[in-house]
Image (cartoon, rainbow, N blue to C red):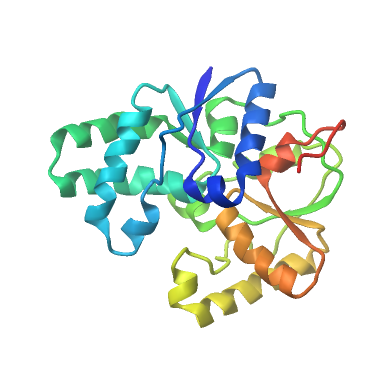
Length: 247
């Protein structure tokens, strides 16, 4: 299968290894991954901050760029949620019938990474090996908007050598929420403190998730406290093998 990678601006600028890991896993499974260099931001930051009209050109660009692709994969639940839940609204806001039609056609072909593997491709064991004690944080967008369910956990349970520890209060938000962490810093910090306490209580070496945004937020606190606990995107764990751990 040919799969087009929508890497998101967040990963492209700050966590490029996540996209590389996605490609490595998909190619290991025998798929061909394409990348459209003209892709840009999904518009989530603008839309969520009240600039809905300014989001419309980004919606239009996404539809035009990926219109011919059979499957589009992104290692970011929040960006996929933006496309699925808000692109329809943006197109109707623009009063553009053709854009609305394009959104309707493309949305069913856009998948979050773990969702693509488990629900679309029917794969739960990607041949990964990661001999570390790991706990998993499910992001709010993956849980409540995409409803990926236990797809990430199914993948992690099949990783060789892993010691997967359940995270207490896993469904509670880490407090990031994009600009929420800036506009509501005290509330965000309190939520983060609760999340980090749960992570540390597992005794895990690594906290993983499907969104680098949550992981960056969590790592900030773990690093400031000098805990030695790392945050690693699930794609990097799945890309690791007995021969080499993906960094």
